[in-house]
Image 1 (cartoon, protein in one colour):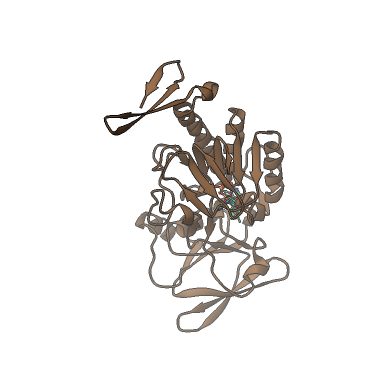
Image 2 (spheres, protein in one colour; image 1 turned 120 degrees about the vertical axis):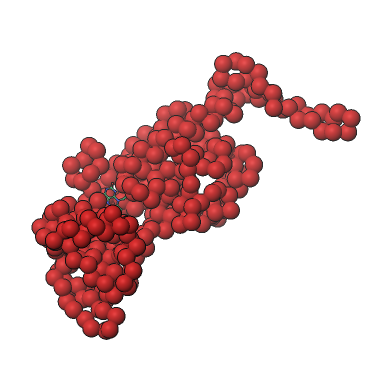
Length: 341
Ligand SMILES: Cc1cc2nc3c(=O)[nH]c(=O)nc-3n(C[C@H](O)[C@H](O)[C@H](O)COP(=O)(O)OP(=O)(O)OC[C@H]3O[C@@H](n4cnc5c(N)ncnc54)[C@H](O)[C@@H]3O)c2cc1C
């Protein structure tokens, strides 16, 4: 079993930023990167044009820059494994992969989320070549093009409003009659002459040479129609990567980690950052900002229970008083006071 000061689960912008902040505060950090998605969602992103400092950069290239930065710190240890089990019942907390077990007093969870995806013919062929899950991220790349949004909720309607600012035509394709978006979004969409809502329909096939050119839509009555369309924005929800935490932390009904204040979870010393707890903004830069907050919160927490300057100064006293076991923890606090608990 290994021991460290801070465990970070996840290696997207939230996890990487948290690692750098914690390492600069002189903590030993172990980061589980995940076996499959080391670097997070950005590794599959063709172009990023909204990360501060980079006018335009490939997602994979941006992630390489994150890791170059991380590799500057010898006190960050990367483990390219997926966490499969956690025990957050008592301090120190315990995290396990198939091969590794680590203990720490503070944990930062940055496991992200994945978009729910529809199934239709040629989906894989045009992924990132006309199909996206993020209008805020990729929308401006489709300026002056005809696009569609799949979905009938807030995210879909918000995306269509955004796209309507620079696309001549935006279709919103909803598989049934039910529009789940809030009334405010619905009334704003209704006022846009370049947004058309198509109900009771689903995309069944997409076409193009290298990039997407047309989509085939099938209606409930089985009729089919081909529409010119160079961009599809999927907005049918996200799935946060929180399965392993559900019996340990408070999650909302969609499975996102509930945070109080900034990044505090329902357990002391455990913090959540990025898309795993943020279903509103879902951007690399907001995830990075939350990673910074989580590491600063972890620092405060560790200073409270485990003063960095004098780890050796923690004494545990245990004695038997008339048959009862009494346990005292005595340690030097930040300002030299003695705490009894
Ligand atoms: C197609 C696409 C394009 C995008 N374009 C942009 C853009 O242009 N600009 C922008 O700002 N944002 C963009 N985004 C959004 C951005 O990528 C995310 O908001 C951001 O990556 C979230 O960061 P995160 O660190 O919270 O999580 P993620 O990036 O999702 O990273 C999660 C990490 O957790 C790891 N993990 C998960 N489970 C485990 C486990 N059990 N054990 C160990 N590790 C685990 C994964 O391996 C991964 O490393 C885009 C997203 C997509 C999908």
